[in-house]
Image (cartoon, rainbow, N blue to C red; front, side, top):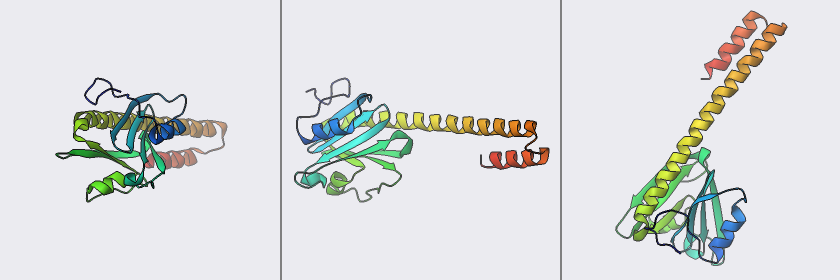
Length: 184
């Protein structure tokens, strides 16, 4: 297993609950770009389409034998927060339906479904991971914006076709077009 300072962010999880949970949650056509175990009982995985946080054991709030995995598609992530301390830190994502841990207590971060804690030797690596996630979120937002513009263009073409077929009057077309573009 490589150390956190080595080039590249894909590492193997140690055999056990985290590795099993990863295998259960990762799709066969989903390449990993990051796979880290930055603290006991916690893993963070970044693929080409989402981020997955896996937690196992009591400290992570999963019960002694429990394991839980939470997936965050990049299109749903609204922010990425990395905090550093003397002994380590945490990476927390905000997304619809997640609760932000505001008091930043270690145990709260360890049990939060949208945060992963890390030891001091992972500080530089976790900054890289946060930057990677931010870039993927931005790319997902751009893709979403382009899709929205294409959708509006398609709807305008449909309205134009209906007007040409006589199904809409010029006035109805103008109203429908204004309504469609008013949402922009």
